Amino acid sequence: MSTLLNATFSEPAPSPALLLLGQGKDLASERGVECAGALPAASDPDLVERARAARAALGDRAFILGHHYQRDEVIDFADVTGDSFKLAREAAARPDAEFIIFCGVHFMAESADILTSDDQQVILPDLAAGCSMADMAAIDQVEECWEVLQDAGVADQTLPVTYMNSTAAIKAFTGRHAGTVCTSSNAEVALRWAFDQVGGVDGTGKVLFMPDQHLGRNTALLKLGMSPEDCVVYDPRKPGGGLTTQQLSDARMILWRGHCSVHGRFSEKNVTDIRAAVPGVNVLVHPECKNEVVVAADLVGSTEFIIKTLDAAEPGSSWAIGTELNLVRRVAAAHPDKNVHYLDSTVCFCSTMNRIDLPHLVWTMESLVAGRVVNPIVVDADDAHWARVALDQMLALPGL
Ligand code: SF4
Image 1 (cartoon, rainbow, N blue to C red):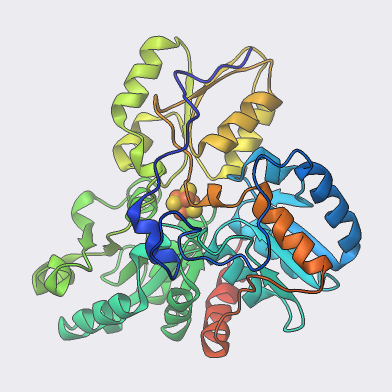
Image 2: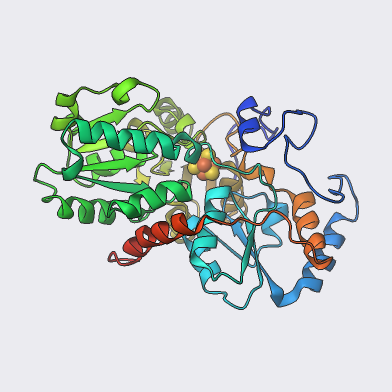
């Protein structure tokens, strides 16, 4: 029987940082994000029926994407589920859908807008559904970083590689500088390609990896055979990134100081504790976790890898999974014949992902039925062009 170790399911307290994602300052409101018309109450007993009716009325005009980390009440209405990259491709594969309703976070909806045609509209049901990791790399900070690299004389031997979990502006920067986007599934392939452009993995060229330092470090150390000394962390809040010219010159991986506020919470102690509590447990974590967690785990991989691994696991086997709690709960429910534990002893929902709820989905769909397009996500045309260049480079990499 599946269990979730010591998990409690209360929502995390709202963070003041969420205010940055909206435009207003009223904590009692939708944090500045307007919902024109009536946002249904979460307690509305007809909510599911309203959702069904609106979904049926929209028919093939709408296609609903649901990220793995979304709530069950939202996933129930998704036409397809997946990670950010899979969903962007699914959106691009639906040219006949007038509306792409993206139940995920802002950068994902941006990628879908970039990959879909101009006459399709991508909609994010709640504009406050951002990503704290993506927000850790602002375009002006990245431009400033590049100037630091130029001043240090290393920019011409450096290629930017940005994780999918970044804003369209950062992807566009990467495209303008001949780099590539990567996912948690293909980070090794993307980094090998990037190093090939600047002299090879064993050469002296560098990669500027944004915005997740952990995915970059884990891939460099565990897949490319680099040492911790090959990696430096660029801190955008410090002059010169907090690095000397010598450090930049010696480095192979210049890691942006960013992380996922969900996966960054798992600790090596979580792994030690679960091994003591559950003999024979297999520890499976996402590569956005810290290096010491990944090293202590048995397996590391993307959300799609985690799902496939559990699908293929032996009945009766024990698993501790270190990724977002909504996904772990669903995996546990799908495998009652396996013992599925949650790696952390405290709640680890992605609070911004959880901004999308059934009331916002109903509001979005009923607005569309009424002829009102709410929360469209539109990427600036120039950024969209260059971000597409970086995304196309990724699509040209082997294995995708
Ligand atoms: S789980 Fe982490 S990377 Fe994913 S949307 Fe939430 S904060 Fe961003």
